[in-house]
Image 1 (tube, helix red, strand yellow):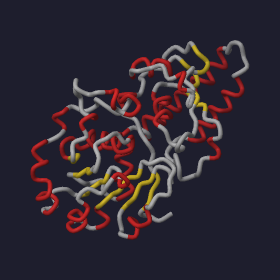
Image 2 (cartoon, one colour; image 1 turned 90 degrees about the horizontal axis):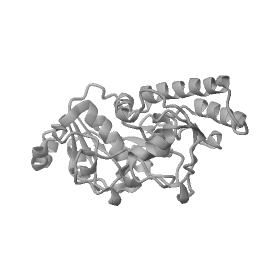
Image 3 (cartoon, helix red, strand yellow; image 1 turned 90 degrees about the vertical axis):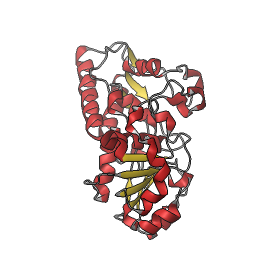
Image 4 (spheres, helix red, strand yellow; image 1 turned 135 degrees about the vertical axis):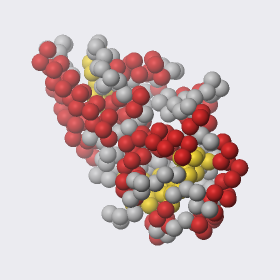
Length: 297
């Protein structure tokens, strides 16, 4: 693989991961991907509780292999049952614990026809849940994903980051990865323009947000952003106030690219692609010398 291109996945805020595994009352969650009649939850608490009380939850490939649902299931102490995960390309969902999920598939098939699980059966399930939770905490949180990007690009020591978006409408990869950088850098990571729905507010209209805003909204304290930096954005790019520039979704537009590419070296510009399966045009950006992270690689 070209050293400038790397796989990336969604991630989940660390605060969403359960501290303890809830008592399980269901073998498998009644939420069925693709069956909209089961999409009965309109708030995060009820949605998460459905997973918390279930040993297993079904998840599948939809428009793309990667999906926020995988991470929500894992974070709530539930085993994903993921048919056909073996067919996933090696560089797609590359950061997920595929081997552990395949283990979970085997447990599901082993126990699905039992009327009641024995204590030994439950111990097998809880053992795997704990291993999945450990993996999620250590590899799949938003701040771990931000560190992964910095590590892969050789920028672990940066102090200031500019995170650009051409659109402020929801984009799971852009929003959730930005959350990780904000957790690590606070107002030293400046999102421009502001992505309002990731900040804590009483004014968020969840009906207008993809997925009802569950998991990726209302997360950050407003003081983690210095609004005054908006007025000097062009000047700060020219003066290289920021060590690196990240485009949260290059498919949704390369805001200010002409000026950014004039003042920043190609390898100081990092591009993210969170789109579902598509004919990605990442080669043109690799040819320019930029780091590119692709979700459905």
